[in-house]
Amino acid sequence: MKRFRGCLRIALDELRTQRHFYLAFLLSASVFFATLISIMLVTVRIPTVLDEEFADSYINVIEMSKIPDGFLSTLEEMPVKIIDFPIMKSDLIGIDGSDPENRYYTEEHPEAESGEILTRYYDMFGRTGKVVEDKPNDHITRLNEALLIGEPWTKEDNTDNKIWLCEKAAELTGYRVGDVMHFPGKLNTDVTATVAGIYKRDDPEMNFYYITFSIYESVIPKMVENNRTLIRPDSILQHNKVINEIKSYYYYASSYNKSVIDGYMSLLFMLYILCGFIGLMVVGILFATARAYFARRTRFFSVLKALGFRNRGVLTVVCLVTQGVLTVAFLVSQLLSPFLLAYVSDCLSDLYFEMNISTNVWNGTALCGFIAVSALAWIVCFMGKRTFKTAEITELMRSESQ
Amino acid sequence: MKIIECRDLTKEYVSKTQSQQALAHVSFSVEAGEYIAVVGKSGSGKSTLLNMIGLIDVPTSGELLIGEQNTKDLSENRRADLRNQKIGYVFQAFYLEPAYSAYKNVEMPLLIGGVDKKERKERVMKALEIVGLAHKAKQRADTLSGGEKQRVCIARALVGEPEFILADEPCGNLDSENSKEIMDLFERLNGEGKTILLVTHNEEDAKRAKRRIRMLDGGIVADETL
Ligand SMILES: Nc1ncnc2c1ncn2[C@@H]1O[C@H](COP(=O)(O)OP(=O)(O)OP(=O)(O)O)[C@@H](O)[C@H]1O
Ligand SMILES: [Mg+2]
Image 1: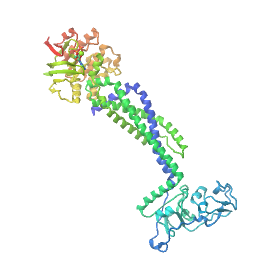
Image 2: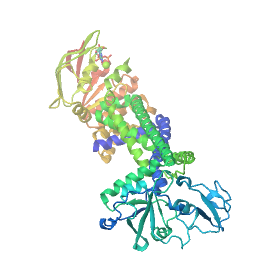
Image 3: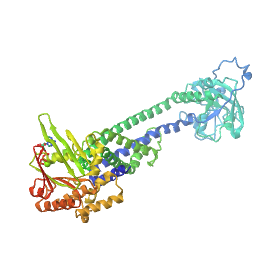
Image 4: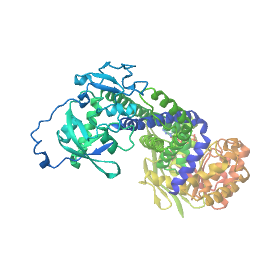
């Protein structure tokens, strides 16, 4: 311990007296640290961003419980029936006359007029909808759209609690037409709903279940943004499996999501590779620095050894000096990296969505980077152990007497 | 009390083309308090002998005892510790660290030995006082004159309170005036009980020692007490 304190003092004096030698290395190390920290912060942020962005695909889990088997006796025989989406019960689509923009159909029918035939959303059911002016929406509507637009339902609509499941959800949960589901409603009420139908789900953009407004009202508390909901069976064991299956199903069934996620995944992969390369660079730089420092100071170490310094001491001083430079470089980089990070996250935000990376770089990730690089520095110095033993005063004397 | 004993020390330098015996079967011993001058012409093996005794080089064969300790099979670390604690080495070329102050240069052996800060300070200042440079403690080593540098080097050799001091041509790089000062200093140190082993070319200087060892071709040809 006392010896180590001696080494520490020597290393500090070395840092002070040899600072000109380190200046170039210090600057490049700072820049490289800033880069590393920025990249690491972006890298760790990506999975979180993906989670946040796609959270609505699965976070809002509604509990459902299956009715006892006995109740199913009459229904048991029923095959899983693929039914039409009940929106098509009526060919008539109500347009809220008070909505000047007719926002339902803005893309294809900027101004849907009475009597017009609408195809959007109905194609998959082989139907079309006809616009009827001033008629309220008296049908089940797409929750998706509903939430984008506002409140399409009126309270009188669909007082029955009914739910339509997509084929996949039905398959995973085992529900069949006629089953009664239980939802925990607002204020811990128990909400029941009858499975009214099962539909094919070809469009990945589509919801995997549809509910009547009455369920919506009684189950979903102040939920405005999360427009998708998972169904899960009562069995806990099955629960995770189903969640995962549905997750992957919905992630990858969705071509849009898939391309976005793939994009980010390859970005992530690239960043990992980049971190790896920077790591290799660091090893190189550190090794070169430690060697250069030692070569520059061989004379000094030779004399120290003649005065009784051990080889281990030389190694310790080289390590400590390298560590010292790294520490200063890290502190300098803390001033640089917010700018770099702001720039990087600005570039990335054009990609798909905001990364929202905080430019506060005083955090665990940066510290982890610093610790990792420091550990690398020590390992590299230990790798050069043999070299650092070569300082010999006899060599020095001989070379100087010539 | 014997503090150094050489038994049949031999050093051979072997290279691909030739082998050279720099030290051939040297045996002698040094008592505490002695002041020995090693003389001989160039290439006779004086430095080689001093380096063996100073544990900065390893003999090819033979034994070297420092105090009671046989150094033959000592580990590199133990040899380093012995250098630090028992041996003070004064170099012809000083080997001071130019960017460090005189104080820091003298402090080195104590830092290496892990001596406490307070004690370090006392001992460094005491050593600098002995060589008469206490007032230049803060001055950078590269701004000192040659004579002062050598005195700092001697202070550095003294600071660890070694059992003996080795000096390889300490005046080799100095003019006659500075040389005289250094030789006076050695004489004074010996008067205070320090054991000194000094290599020199200068017969005048050698005469000031109490014992003179003359070397030729790696062997001792004369060992006379003056
Ligand atoms: N590393 C070495 N490799 C080969 N030969 C060496 C080496 N060191 C010393 N020698 C040889 O050993 C012999 C003794 O050298 P040494 O340095 O001890 O002489 P010296 O008496 O100190 O001479 P000088 O008075 O010139 O300093 C010389 O012939 C020298 O060439
Ligand atoms: Mg010599």
